[in-house]
Picture 1 (cartoon, rainbow, N blue to C red):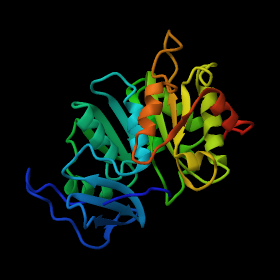
Picture 2 (cartoon, one colour):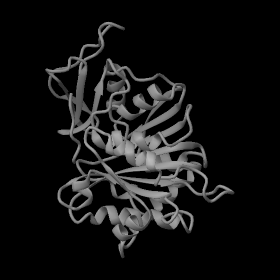
Picture 3 (cartoon, helix red, strand yellow):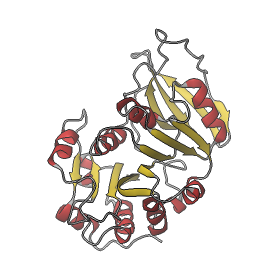
Length: 293
């Protein structure tokens, strides 16, 4: 998967540093391995079954190394200031939950991951917010999603992979409907889609989300894709972030405007600039793509 990373070691000045393992560590789904960055003493990348899955700076909870997480964070910034309730489907090392807690103290977050042993280890290795600020649940993401109350989250993030592929039951119309069900009206669904030219999976995922949104959602800037320009132009493999605003408000225009000029500026200002497509540009991208079941 196109998850570029830089790597970590704990902040020894603020608390006793945990001992990080050298070499592969058995987990329920295979192995985990920590790669420390020789140039940045506090940074470590978590590899799960050989795939870079999270990168944290244990001295800086606001740090995000992966570009797609920086893009997601920029979209979350569209929500009003203050704590949020966030659901993370695919927790791994919890880099984004850490960043959200840093920016929005006292948020309530739930991280779901299929690997119970991995969740135990990341609690030991990393300085994660404690429950109830961040609860970790070992469960299948689809099963967990079905068990949660309606309208109970402000943000839902899907970042779950089996190798470099999202499990089939976490894509398509059924997943989109289930994820939007647990969002409050105006809440944000954020999906990490690893794709390659000609972005067929991205188009299918977008087409799968549209039926669960308001009729004018595309025209009104409540569905968007974010990625580096080369990825959007179909020149190379990479991560595409799909963002959708949950319907259901008495005011159909309520919730973040994904076409907001401030978001476009924030994305252009990232270390690796990104673009956001909304409205007519997004409609052209989706084209005649058929939704997934």
